[in-house]
Image (tube, rainbow, N blue to C red):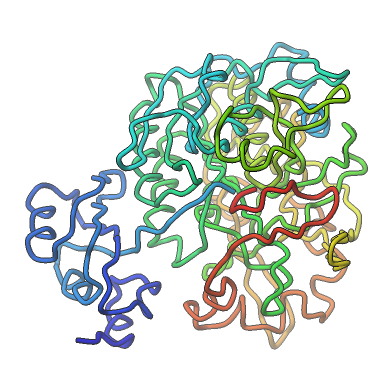
Length: 533
């Protein structure tokens, strides 16, 4: 029998994403419980609802089940032991000039290399050719125990973190933290697809291995659309648990900054779990094929805040992510499908490197920087690291920049406001000098818009429990730019972001099928057109 959207909406335990689900279909779900579930809860779901247990997610007091009839969701929600039910959503994967743009050499020159600071890379695995610094590997891909990179994304990410110093064709490449031990936790399959539950299980494993491998950083160059508030989203709750366990979590912002389908100009398109206020969310800059940062520009595809539903100010900062040359996985999907992405080094296509673009590539640049900071100051908390990165970020930007698509001639104008570049551009040379002994939280603030007064305020940047204190994190120009509050319709004047019906707003922002376009501007993205690239 049809279960109405009203019935779903009446249950506070059901995620809004189920509101328009086909009642005759089945769905994969994550059921969070008030207490950690055990065999009796798992058996009850199997016996009464036909759900098969996929993952035990003790980190968020949950079980991930497949094959649950949509018509049974309300009944499961009525179980007094159940806290909340979410869809087990699909997630997908979002050097020379890069290192120069963020002043990485300043850290290398004083002997910082990330040595002893473990980085957990939750991605598509790693090619055997680049597994020399990997101290632990495990696959969370259902039915596939291989930890090799069959897709090609994870290897590229790990190369940005730690490829050894290599010179080819007169160009020298070196990973940001090339002596950091890597923990390879594979969650994306050969096509770059994964699930919330696999990512949560991997985060759970990273926390369990924290002491064994001194894991200081989790790199998440992946994401999916925001479907509910971060306060109930199990994926967001998992990254918060890692943060509170003492691990810095660095997440890609997403690549939907050009989405103007409903007049939002790419605002409100940050992906989950980058919408969580605890984590460090990273947008992408273009290095403009030079090691100097003075000519760098924001990549027009880099997703912008504020976040859907909760209106969190994101990204937190930006880093180089465009046309990044890094390690490739021989025979993997990306390498075989897009051979033109082999860079020309010394006059010929390199058989060892691959070029990708996106916030997925910017994310490990920041993760590597965090490893350098923790090697320098091992006692820093995740909140202190985040505050230092944002405080020391380079804040000199143009008012705006324009990217032109050579195929369509469409121009994309980007403004350098707080929702586009956050606190600024990663600067490793300054970050390693930052001594922050403040206690408290470094939560990204919430933006509130008063339509009557045409005024925006940020909450959560002051107070006794907030680490920002009186220090300047955002420069005046970075916060407001020149047109953010000018009465234009860049963000304001639309219910897409500020509407009271959060579920509707989410659907309007994301539409029904978020796939990054293949027609991209010269010098902006590679020919890869996938989520995270």
